[in-house]
Image (cartoon, rainbow, N blue to C red; front, side, top):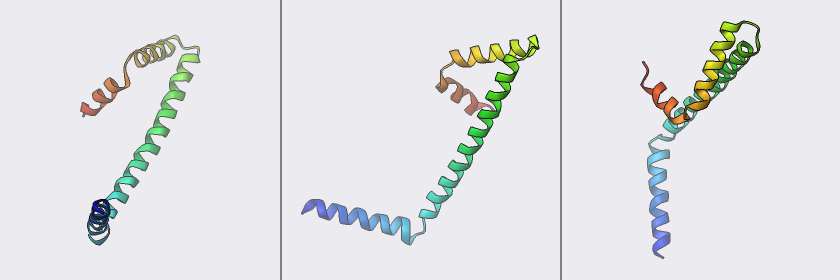
Length: 90
């Protein structure tokens, strides 16, 4: 019996906060922003990866050396450290 009372309170809170006060629109706006960032990151990552691959496989030794150094640095750096570094860059 106590469990059904808790579920009823949760249901009322969700209805009051999300639906009646139109806060679901905030969630939808956040979802839209997340999808935009995700698509942009996927496209940018694919383009950057293709460029680095092209540089590495090309005949230009300077570009190949830069690409090799970039690959070695990225391969040896934990993703969390990269994310922290990018987060504090202006």
